[in-house]
Length: 242
Image (cartoon, rainbow, N blue to C red; front, side, top):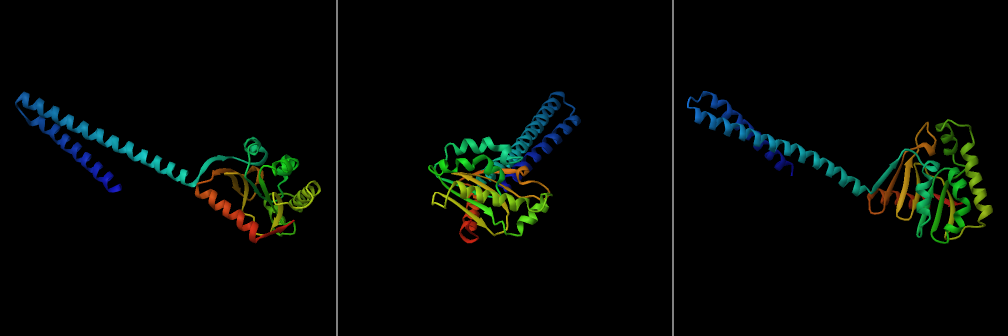
């Protein structure tokens, strides 16, 4: 493809050169009708070559755009939000209303999730299997993340313990359709999967999790597959019942 593009460009560049030479040559012709004819031919050939080069530029730019669209389609990326949690609550809500297969959540203490959805988990679990992963409150990463978010020591540990306590009080014992586990692996991304879509984003130093850019990807793209595999691995190999 690249070879054909180069040949196309060089051919039209040659056409422009030929046309320009013919136009310049017309000035030395003494017979008026011959001079006019050669000049007209030269300018026409030059114009044709220039038009071809303009088309080449347009096609090249279009191909770049198409390549970008192909990459986005292969990744499954649907949207990028400047933040998550409470800021895009409506995006979660509309999908949770129709959830019918799988809901997976992975985070630190899930403070916003607890506030927004803890009371709804029982009803949601009647329609979809729910798995929740919070960081082990005994993990040293809780104190590290407090420093990274520039907040008091013990904040995240307290949020995790509150989530676990609230969950156990409301939902006595783990059931297959509603499970809570604590994980001990390195916290890398926040995941909120609702059926065939995943909201996810990184943890950034100096910024609260809820203020972190978040992406939404769909099943069928390689990003969904990678994130699904990450959650499954943490769930299976790096977590235990809360």
